[in-house]
Length: 269
Ligand code: FPP
Image (cartoon, rainbow, N blue to C red; front, side, top):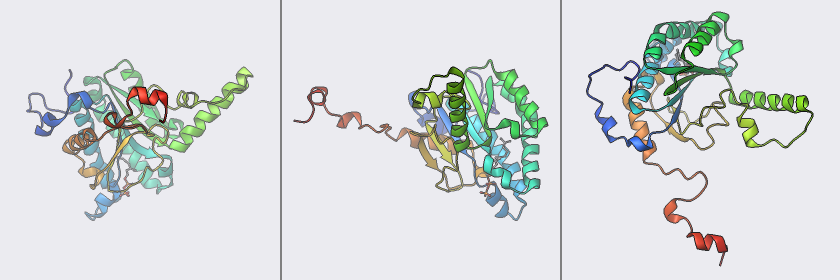
């Protein structure tokens, strides 16, 4: 197994890692990185300083995901709604993203991480787009781990885009047919990614903010009462431990409370 992103070879594993059940690690973790602005404000700094500090938290999240052997990590880096922010902040965010891709691409390659994006990537500045496309291309053969950045992303737009693709398909084939959930899922931005098992949000807000609306149908949620720039690998480990204490029933009942099979077959008696 390769070393985690940014982890230091030869270091003792974090004690919390020993408590994690390796058989029940979430396959896909998605994170709403929130609170950069408030982190900066609480220190009397401009908002962009919060975003800058958020980069170290991104590195910590990728490292922790690697140490836990989480296969898919998806980060909400820029929403469609974020375009409404002052243009200086938007420019600064893309400049940070460019710097991040440039400085971390070696680590991403070294750690065998497939890099992907979801969202309306064509909306992004050309220079950012080409950096993203280049890294996606150079890492597309990696299978063990995937880091996905959601950029110019909106969950409702993703579903609408999928519906439009289905309409186009029906028009092309000339055969009208009933749309199934599988049809929609196959037209999402990254249809091959499994649904997130765990959704983390920082900053103590209980909101989904238009993130992965389709995919989080059965995700377990953990809200952390810290701002994103304060997020560290330990928070990731603690969150996974919390996830492992939960029972996922997907709308069913727990195995201990399930009806015995004979009774279920005969119906109510
Ligand atoms: C939300 O905090 C965060 C964002 C809109 C941007 C996330 C960006 C980063 C973590 C840094 C760059 C990321 C990468 C992947 C290079 P907010 O500004 O909405 O905080 P607030 O709610 O306190 O105002």
